[in-house]
Length: 224
Image (cartoon, rainbow, N blue to C red; front, side):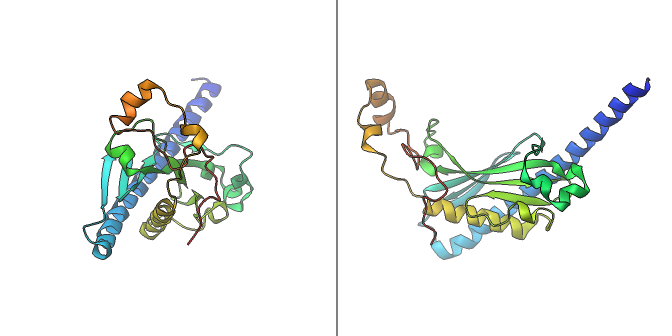
């Protein structure tokens, strides 16, 4: 094998090994989240009783769901591994300056849906990303999202564990519970066609989202 070909083959093998390693770590982190979601449900049921719906379920290998009555969180591990773009502030941290491979991450995203959207298969209903977790080869992480306090400046400080998983999920749950459905503006709902009437309203499947007709802003929920 020529020297250039050998270099490319070596580079390919190293990159594949790195991504496989990150994928395994991220899958384990998702399992930790799954365990903590079950613990949250068990703990909350002791306080709220059976009248309030509280449940969790693994929908697939990479997707989890936790239901808090009218709200549901979908937790999804993306099957691919990503590298931060060169303009991302994460490259300015000493942690990545020491090892560029730490800039490759798996992403776990958390979305808030109205529970009815899932229960009644309202496929046109929007969900809202409330957090996403970046996890690298060291099992180090940081979180972007609504009210999440473990941002990029904390990258490299801690390993992902059960306590972190619970903190992230409970923060997302609290936000979702306080993120209410707003009455849509009159102008966005004043005209409908017959197809919409017959296919959605009569069948009790009107398209619904918490911010239908509004922009999804970071400052539109009052923090209690």
